[in-house]
Length: 468
Image 1 (cartoon, rainbow, N blue to C red):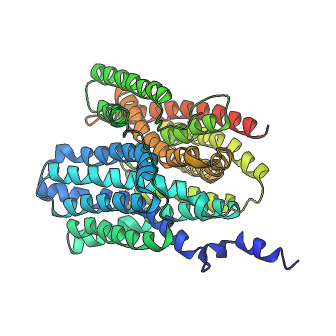
Image 2 (image 1 turned 135 degrees about the horizontal axis):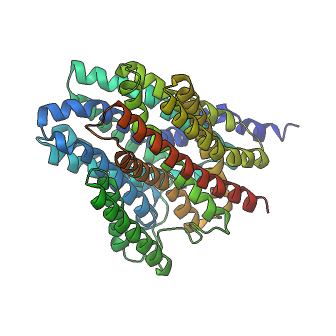
Image 3 (image 1 turned 45 degrees about the vertical axis):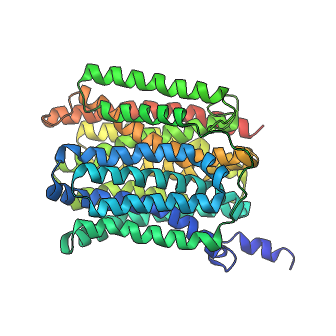
């Protein structure tokens, strides 16, 4: 009995805060928090920055360039880690994030601020990807699911406290002080990396950096991101060109000796390949809620920003609470069931939201929000752990782990652009009346439900392959 006690204790939540794991837990958590708090701080403080600097027409680019470069950074992370080793790669990428943050704090105009946001995105993209790759290295399998539950808790804290703190700093000091919060977090992260992260040996021979493929992928995401702001015909043409660019990136990567994607990425007959589709498609579908829900609460129901934000936060609360609960599931069978159910719940949540918007039924929309959040919470931790377990070790594990946050970010970026375009084509726009806005949102949610249903098909395939 005494021989089993330490192993049992390690599986408890308190083990994450034990002397052995406190450093890794804090470091990984702060790596996640860099992204989470940055997103909510910038969203809150950016309108005040635009008021001082001008360039309101460029406000969306501050988000777009961050997302695009975060995706490129995530794709490059495995190569960067192989060249520099884990510790040095994290420090260098965090320094890039810091430089970008300093630029945003002292930016004299919007183009300079956007440049800083691009550097922030690339640095944080690499940091997040390498942190995911380090989870199975720094923690035993029994604690991996707890780390994903803790990650969800961090996002919940950021969702609630981020806007409040950023709003306070912006209102009583300045938007530059709100932006400066990223500098403090970046410095703290670098300090923690040195004693916590093993240096990792640099590869003796590393293939040239895949600049062409990274540029092609980043250009494709950028095209899709800006397509919704153009005319319908041009938007469709740009989206089509972007899809061809992404396919060309995939084909070139398959033929390359220095691949940036896992060997079985997006294959139907492989658990990792099918699982990566779920990782991409579920955030893509859920982005419809992120884009339109707060707007809907204010424009369709007449709520103020505070109440609208609180209603919208119901998704984040449901997501985080579910993720913490699912992290307590002891066996793989239970986690596989959670994966199978997750995208089905997301589909139903989208349907509930669509019906609620169409019928002007606020309670049904809230039910939809909560259902979506439960679906996302059931999925993320169990699926990430499953893919990490099944891919093995070495560079393939690094590639797969790095793809998890990268695909999630890509899903949100693609979803925001695609459903924005869908809604605009259906009548939603700057000059839309109430009926046009309602119709556009309903069509976007129906389209998102269809994407979530496709994710469910891949989810069942992932579970089926994992059970073999």
